[in-house]
Structure formats: C-alpha cells, structure tokens
Image (cartoon, rainbow, N blue to C red):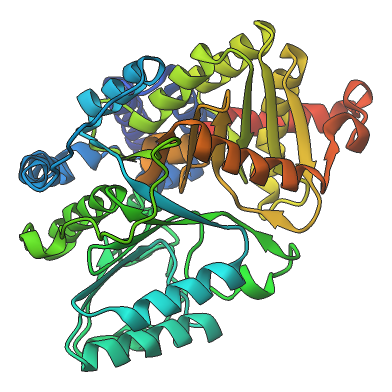
Length: 478
C-alpha cells in the first residue's frame, strides 16, 4: 500500500511539472501563466482537471487552415469593393491602417445605419428584412435559442427556404448547449444549411470552451447587414432574472455590408469547408441607400480571433484611448480588462481625458462581478468615472471617442473577448455616427448611479476586499 501511494505521488508530481512546463512554453500573458501555475500548484487534482478542460492552448494548430482561407478570401473580396472618390481624414488614418495591416479589414464609404436599443425594434426589423429576402440569408449567432422568439425566427426562415431562398446558419455549440438538436434538425429538414461552430461532446467541461464564436452577424441578399450585441433569444424582449435586457444592435446598408458578408463567409468555410465568393453575394450598393455627403459614414468591420498573431480589436481600443483628446465613453456588460486596456484607461484618465465606464449594477455572474470590482476600483483611482446601470441588465458593447470615432459589436471589455473568442465590431469614422452612439450612451446614463454612491469604496469590509483580490487572480481564466 505504501509502495502504491509513493508511486501515485511520483506520477502526480510528474504530471504537474509537465503541465507547468507546457504552460510556461506557451508564452501566454505573464498574468495568465502565473494564474495557471498557481492553480496547478495549490489545487491538488482539481488543478489538473481544470487545466485539461480549460487550459490547453490548442487554438493555433486547429485554425491554421482557417487563417489561410481568411487571407485568400480577403483578396477575392477586394475585387468587388470598387469605391470612387474615397477619402480618409488624417486623424483617422492611423487607426484605419492598423486594422487594415493586421486584420485585412477594408474601410467602406456610403453607409446608412439604423440603431436599435431594444429587442422589439431589432427583431421587428429583422423579421421584416427576412420577409423581403430574395436570394440569400446568412445568420451567425452565439445563441439561437429554442424559445418563443427563436421559434418565430426559425419559422420565418423555413418559409423563405421553401420559397427557394438560400439560408445558412452558424450557431455556437457551447452558447446553445441547452438547445435540443431537434430544434435545428427541423430547420435542416426544410432545406436550411445549418452548422454548429466548433462542436464539442461535453460543452460544460472542455478546453474547447475557451474558443467560442461570440459574433452576431446577419446578412440578407448581400444588401442589408445586422451587427451588434443581440443574440436570437426571448430575453432581449421579455428580460430574465436580472430584469429587462438592454442591448444595442445596428442595421447597415451600403459598403459596410461587404465587410459583414466577408466575415460570415470566412466562418462558413470553417464550418462547412465551402468557399463562397461569387459576385452575387457582393452585389452593387443599392441606389436607394441614404447618404449624407456633408457627413459621410465610413465603416470598417473588424474581426478578432485566437488564430491571429495580435488581438486586433483590443489593439484598436488601446490606440483610441491613447489618442483621445476630450472624452471616451465605454459600455460593457463585463469588465475584466487586459493589462494593455487597463493601462490605456488609466493613462487617458490621468492625462485629463473624460473617461466614463458604464457597467451593469446587477450582473448575470457573481464570480465575474467579484473579479471585476478590483479592476473597477483601480480605474476609479486614476480618475475614470464609473457608472452602474440600474434598469435591468445592460449587455451593450460600445465605445465613443471625441465625436469622431465610435464602435459597436460583440466585444466585451474582458480577457475572453480580447483573446479567446471570435468577435466582430464595426468601427465608424466621422461625427455623424459618433454623435448618434453618444446619444445612446447619454440616454443609458439617465438610469445609472455613480459607483461611489452604490458602494463605500474606501470602507469595504476587509474580508470582501480579500475575496475580490483572490478572485482577481483567477480573472485570466474566467
């Protein structure tokens, strides 16, 4: 018995050391490396289980073919992107070039944008546009729920498929882990081409959970695109345990649709291994697109994923924060920032830029709430104005800077969005969209309270502060 116990101990130590060496050789961010080393060292057996399910860095090998296809299809897309009299303002040139050089994202002019700040408006418009579809409907959503709203959308898509419209759907296998497969099989049976992104056998316990498709993209006939933070689920209309769900979504008509279409078709190749790049999916910009020549809307659709050498959207956020002159307003449902973003927030605030951060008062994850609080206090010390949204759960992800640059999409201000998830944002350049999204932020601000009014920041109980600090150590893993 003593012999077996000793043998087990030697094997256990060998496994732990092997895993630690593997973590060190992965060259992750030092904070994430240290977090995993602490987990493996101080959580016997549990640490091994957590690492096997959540810690293995398998992303590079799995996505090499997807990355190559990404570059190929970008070159093919450029053939269709004919833009005459295209001009970029000097103050936007560096950011546009950053996204182009590292992401291949093209900026597109002549865009008409509709902003939706509630589920009723968004889904009403979506169903209307689906009803108008003549050729193709492309949907990519982290969640496509089997509820009242999801069933209504599914029925509408089935009706269009029966009319001969091509319908393609990508849903995330982990995001929809509680949706029975019969919901999707019903659509497949009606001729809808539907795939799960990166399917897994045990969605609640798998390392593949780290790399999820968090994008929310819809393109109809190559002429109308939707992008933002809303999934296809009833919670955006009826709310849930956190109260009403507040979110922001956009409808784009014009050149920006090319960028959304391209993002979808690259992901479609990944799930279906079919390269779709025909001109029919990139039609000429409709002549009825309303464009204001005095305030043009320049749009650049930027994607980020774990396969790219750099965190594309994160670097864009850092660039915006460090170049800001007057103000930066940010909304995010979660706040566990990376070191570069946290640094840029502090620098901007200390430099006198009016930085406002809006996060929910009621979070949908207590663990994330505890982890984020220490980061929030740190930004507060630097002069960031932190506001808590009280009218339900605010799931909006947007940024507005200096009445000049703005963005909205699926990217949260957390490590998972910046490093692990497949995300998509549209960046706008010019006063028109910046001021419109600024109005969205200011409207939400009416339902906010200042962090200092909600909590006694200086007099937090010691045990609570200690607990938050401990959870912060795990933030790279959340």
